[in-house]
Amino acid sequence: MEQQQPSIIQCRRLAELDIANWDAVREALRDTEPCEYRQYWLDEPSELFQPATARVGWTCDALIVYAELSDLDIFNPVTTFNEQAFTEGDAFEVFLRPRQQDAYFEIHVTPMNQKFQLRFESGAFFQSLKGRKGEGDPLESCKFYTPVIESQTRIAQERNRWEVVAALPFSFLVERGTAEEGSEWLFSFSRYDHTRGLPAPTLSSTSPHAVCNFHRQEEWGILVFTA
Image (tube, rainbow, N blue to C red; front, side, top):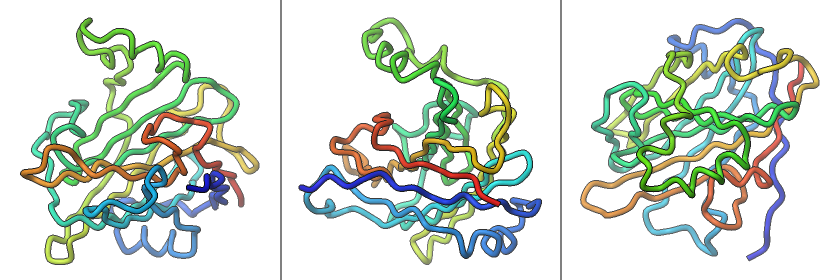
């Protein structure tokens, strides 16, 4: 299996955008470069793999992410903010790290618009959490309990598809300075696609991971902020 190179995506500046207006969201991001989901760690996609795409842009104060996800069984019973829902049903995931900082963020949105917000001090810090099993929830110290992510979702059961749009504020993501033209961020989009009655979800990502580990930053793509 030939290893592919991470994507370099031009992240275009958008006019101010109401993410509750689906037509406006789709129009604003229509000509942006799509990020396609794959199972790069497999020679062939698994039988239950469903395609998905994500698109990005930015406004003066937020990164805008829009995704369309094919899904034959759309569900997630968790409705409580910041609960770990990806083990219980479908979840869309965003990983982001401005290149000038070590800290990075993991954001989840479910089809029912339940959100999960995590901040990791660094990649090394995340690796250290693996040694804390049996000491309670190792992610507890990484949860960001103030709701800061705005998102909307909609489900089209008859088309086996759901959509998500999220506005991720720079005031939350950028610890020094701000996002501006020429900024570069590492990014990855991934998903947990559960099917009721099966023991494990189908995983996929926009990053060419050699092994199925979404936190492998060396394989994340690069967002380049443009006008």
